[in-house]
Image 1 (tube, rainbow, N blue to C red):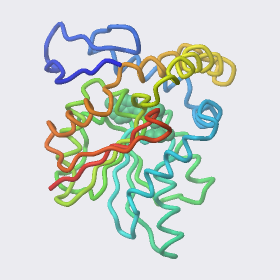
Image 2: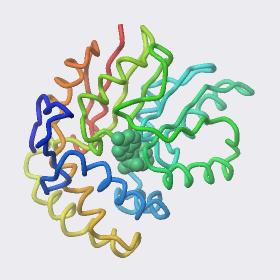
Image 3: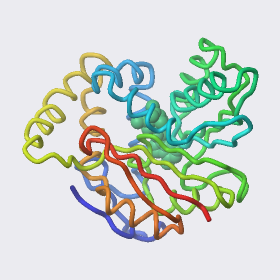
Image 4: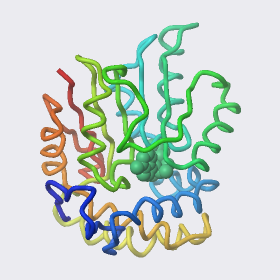
Length: 264
Ligand SMILES: C[S@@+](CC[C@H](N)C(=O)[O-])C[C@H]1O[C@@H](n2cnc3c(N)ncnc32)[C@H](O)[C@@H]1O
């Protein structure tokens, strides 16, 4: 697991970054990530279920429990893709407060993922309840202090400049607002790493090829997990961005961590 620490300034001419296991020019990473999600958008949700054995649903449910969605809450779900987090927030409000809703915005850099999300919203009866924005986590088209809850689920590791994305999260949150990031992290159960590696590197790319027709895309996803900062290193980046009361909770023994913080 490689911890990045502070990243190089975005305007450095020779700036490089990682794209999975590869080192690439920082300016190229967003395009490479876009190719991955363009390729898998149509099968993304099915792959999530197959790859995690349905566990991603429990991880996302933990995120929603922590948010405690309420009517009128202004939620910005960054890298929101096909809308999974947004739907769960709206469903939770509807269940607890019949006839009421939250103000949910899904922002993602990939138009194809958003298109899938809009179709799913229609099928689930959420038409008109969500604002869909094509945009970059590093430069949010959202006013300062206008958001009660910022979420990013399995998205932050795809962003080129994590520090810029965290600074943007801190900027758009209102005082008293909450930050949540759900992300793959460092397995904290000794002895399971060999099995986890074998599943990640041998099985997942094959499933990706079989189901989404793109083994390389899923090889990137697995490699990007290994390159992402571990629990402590990501918490340090959150603190550097000015977020307060930073913490995390391991899920599935640290395969995933739910990071949280406050804007004070
Ligand atoms: C693994 S998917 C997660 C989707 C959704 N949050 C979920 O949990 O199902 C990662 C998403 O991050 C988006 N993404 C990657 N880089 C981004 C960026 N810089 N800004 C916004 N979205 C980005 C991708 O387009 C993709 O939809």
